[in-house]
Image (cartoon, rainbow, N blue to C red; front, side, top):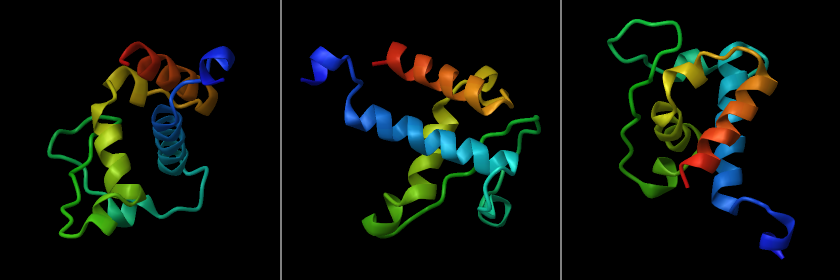
Length: 100
């Protein structure tokens, strides 16, 4: 059925959703206080990569922010620098579809 509907695997759809919500939070569209939790890496740029959060327990390691940071840091800079949420989501979908 999934093939007939041409859906992406659930793991990819969840990753796209997590990264899109993360982008909206960074843009200030959502009331998630990301700046209190995130630490940019030492490199200075407009859309930076963030330092991974070290977790000792799997329940925290696989929670939203630590897991999404791994995904966010793997996305190319030309995609993370997109400010429009619809264009960003389209670019992320294209990126994950092409990197299967």
